[in-house]
Image 1: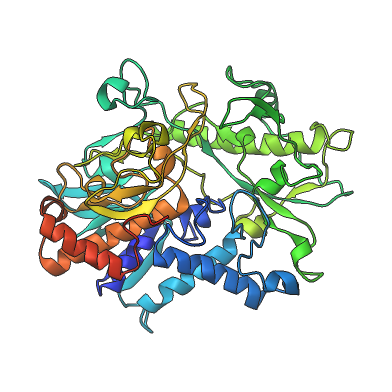
Image 2: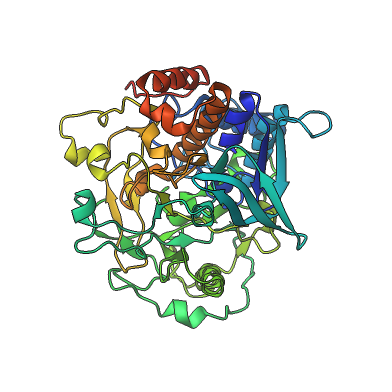
Amino acid sequence: MAAAMGACSLGFRVVLTEETAWLGGQLTSQAVPPDEHPWIEQAGCTARYRRFRDEVRRFYREQTPLLPPYRADPLLNPGGGWVSRLCHEPRIGLTVLNKMLAPFFDSRGEGGLVVRHGLRPIGADVEGDFVRSVSFDTDRGEQETISARFILDATELGELLPLARVEYVTGAESKAETGEPNAVDGDPQPGNVQGLTWCMALAYDEGSHRVIDRPTQYERWRSYRPDFWPGPHLGFEGLNPHTGERRTLPLFSDDWLNLFRYRQIVDPGKFEPGYAAHPITIVNWPQNDYFVANIIDEPAESVAERLNDARQLSLSLLYWLQTEAPRHDGGIGYPGLYLRPDITGTADGFAMAPYIRESRRIRARFTVTEQRVASYTNPGLAVAPGFKDSVGVGSYRIDLHPSTSGANTIDTPTLPFEIPLGSLIPVRARNLLPACKNLGVTHITNGCYRLHPVEWNIGEAAGLLAGYCLAQGREPAEVYESSDLTADFQSLLRGQGIELEWHL
């Protein structure tokens, strides 16, 4: 979507396909409040991403009955969650995104942007190093082919890479290959991929009884205990990801440090009576991380089974919370918890799509490794070493959730970093570009390049690169290989409001 905005802003026609009913990915259909860095209110994102954040706050101020103190707060956090400075309802994020896309349509809907929902890529027509078209299954049971001069892959799993025969990597590279301190020893592990999470929206109505039917796989997940975890997977005992120390994080507590507040997106106390009867949170917690099996490059039947298992894990977590969880005030269970389908736009309160942390990644002209961004490999620096071909910035810890190899969390500090143009250029393909976390990073650095503002920046830069190449009659590899063309492209990026370096 960010890529479409970038390309359309240069006057080019874009066909934007989306498998679900909602555009927006993590922000909407996956129901993941934005994970951001400490400087997000002042720096470290594109102008369009900042506009998105500003428009979300504007919507709440103008379209919802906020109480006066919150309406006047320039740093309004509508939900009050502590994962982000801007925890908001997915449907409001969707409304804002559609508003941002609106100028690119004409009155007949035939302008620079055409949006097609319900399309899933199934094939590609490739001639040599050039991808001529992509074929799709539609939600009408038909097939459709779309041709374009540039193809941008912003799918959650890098779905176009195998279809278009683009060289790619999955899972964990070896230490011998990348030299990364946290890479795996021995051979690469292509099936070693971070777990996914099928998020759900939960509200809490204290004193009510809303217990669901016992899930089919409840006994399986109730008894599951990973080797590296201090207690059952369905429990409040866990590990501090930064220190590895054992800790208890309850559902509720007397302070803000609890699971419900973690990704809370609706705080009734900030609104006039009647807007929100109960608080609402997004369940994207260690307890519903699914890392039992990989879904990349696996048979369709296995993928469907594993995604169903991930949903069953989340549903089992809900049932456990309702019936068996130790309460913060004594007693057992929170029977007043209930799913909110209106929040997720689905029939059951689950997100439209699972939250995918790690996808296929292109083999790129340049791959970002741990040594370039970690604070412990760059002592004495305030920001990571820059790239002469920077196309944006980002900042987040190297945050790898437990993986399908049985490895525990890797969570280590980084320095604010840049996104190099070389990581967007495939080693061979001429007109297919990565537009999200499928760029040239490793299993390790994926952990800091996969968050909302960074993925947005990657997509926007990719869309602008495609447009620049069309306008100049060039190819992406030419832009990367020429310092003059790179500098010219960077001037375009700056003019579009994309920060290329950090100023802290």
